[in-house]
Image (tube, rainbow over the protein chains, first blue to last red):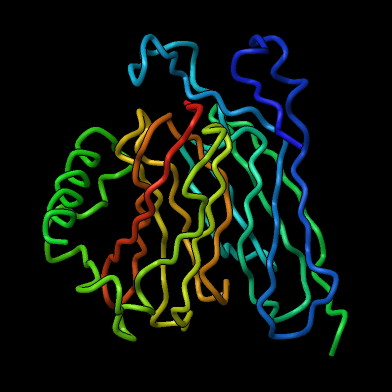
Length: 129
Length: 147
């Protein structure tokens, strides 16, 4: 299913309706020491702040609004940081890998361009020896 | 190959000039490394050149998927510390920088980009803590621009 494009269909007042807390998805099977895929996603519009005035010609438009940082904490230790520009899609889905060395808390923190912080956390548990 | 490399280096310099976030992108030729022969990479190059998986033709430039992966070991004193995604054809050149630590275990990143319409080249720069920055590229054609 095609993702909804919020760029030209929503005004500034409707932005809060387009934002939902982030979520983390872990694999069903996790065993100690294995590298697993972690998916973090969040419903959030990405507006570049540009408007097209001719083909391949852009001018400044409304203020840019997007997720500009994602931090990953595993057992309260910063594992990864993803710094993004406005040139990422709406409702970003970011998948990365993590070594499941121990069981513990996994937290993802998204920061938007207006410095609002959105968090999601889950517990990484081994399902196999 | 030489021309491509020269163009890339020039472009990195331009991007660094316009975008503060790219201030760390090296402009000296010796700091960016390219494979000598893209068709037959040496084992050392295979470890350091990022693999880019994305479609050659993208219908919707507002949602262009990209997967970057590498086989490089992630050891405490030798790992890939970051991966940057760039497209010099775009009004927003710098797409993002993902920083890794050995706790990641492997270099893998999936995300979606906004890319302007037309033909362009997506560059990925991977930085190894011991062997500097390495560049890989992928040509794409975007039907409907996403910027």
